[in-house]
Image 1 (cartoon, rainbow, N blue to C red):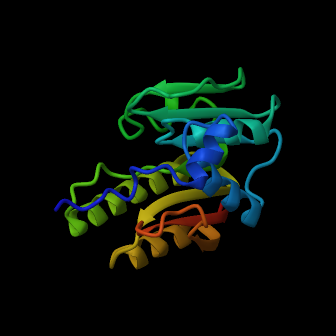
Image 2 (image 1 turned 90 degrees about the vertical axis):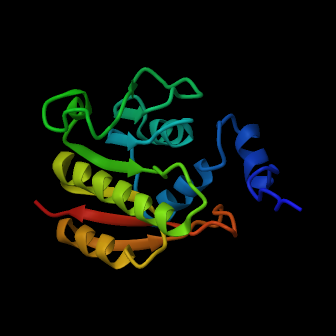
Length: 200
């Protein structure tokens, strides 16, 4: 008998996100991270890596307001509309020019977000390794494009590679937080590593 997919049935977070006009339940994860770290404020410049279907971009755009700038990037199209002060680029964030090209159009950024996750294979070790690689590449973008004092939020699957990811983050940021939001499903091994106050 095949196992039930724990992600198939909408839970209370999924329903609440839809009721609030967001395309995905992940908005509540960013909302909690924002609340606990005072991450987003009006007028900020934000880069959202792996933005589709768009819940994080919508939330961040709302928090930074018309005086801010947001660039959302993803391989897939967004499933929502963004306000005029937010832009979307469909493409691979890691092949776009991180110094002078589209990725840098609003740099230096005050916050770099990455909710990226690999397409899971069902092989735990493979998925963990791919998640680690995505995290490290997103962190490298944040190290390049984030301004002094900026912040980074990156998703990673828990694994033996987590200490290496944390060590690399601490090279660039004065403070580190590990957050597993309440909206994370019980079966998930994801958590978010947050870097605050990027070193000059």
